[in-house]
Amino acid sequence: MPQKATDCHVLVIGESLVDIVTDPTGRQETHPGGSPMNVAVGLARLEVDTTLATHIADDGPGELVRAHVERSGVSLSLLGPETASTSTAHAVLDDDGAAEYSFDVTWAPESLDLGRPDLIHTGSLATSLDPGADVVEETLRGTPEGTVVSFDPNVRPSLAPAWGVLRERVERIASLAHVVKMSDEDAAWLHPEMSVEDLVAHYAGLSGGVFVLTRGAAGCTIGTRRWQETLPAPAVDVVDTIGAGDAFMSGLLYALLEADLTGPLTRGEPDQQGLRACARTALRSAAVAVSRAGANPPGPRELLLT
Image (tube, rainbow, N blue to C red; front, side, top):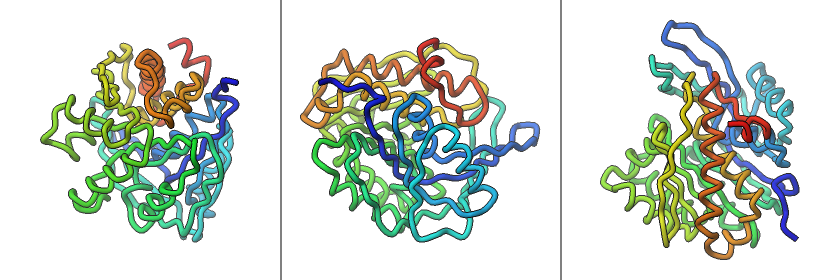
């Protein structure tokens, strides 16, 4: 029997942190953040049963993260060893709302228990920052049959290993995934020599699933080994871009689960029409997020109304 997103369980693996945001006037605000955490919150707000495997410490920032994720309905699975302090990211906004980041982050899980979720999502610092990135990659090689793997490299060059090392790791993890999403900024850093068409073909070929390139106000390009297509973004007044890619990701995963496309993804290739509809849902989710401050993804009603 076909299942809906609300019948599914998703495991998100990755960092949680606190964003300290400085706007162009110098005013500071503090928000819970971290790409995997944002995706987990986005899924939970869309009423998907979601567990976040992460590090937080018993400190003020850690309590801020805990309250945020639990208020959104995310279950926490804290990874060992215990960290001395919760990770932080400092984001400085320019006049257009774009963010420049610096980080104080620890990612060092000793082991991961996947269980048997319907979908596993990971990426960002969890798949680039050692020593934890090696643990995540090795764990994904043991993903249970029938479980969809989703990956967003969400590159942070200031924390990344050498360019060639990270590019090879991104490609290895992409080859283990059924869904790979990448921003145009990530693509320009990882593959400056590739056109959009070549990039989509390359990553769809590695994964055998679906690859999506987000392109800001220009929308997104989605494709598989057999086809690719560019879709426009909804028009929206941008407040800031923090969490936009993560809201896109959670919207995309929600739509894939809601359309019951996980089976086709694990078996080979779902149809173009279904994936196109999922990408449009993801674009609506991102549009809601950029229309307000911080990483603040939509709930079900907001997603339908956008």
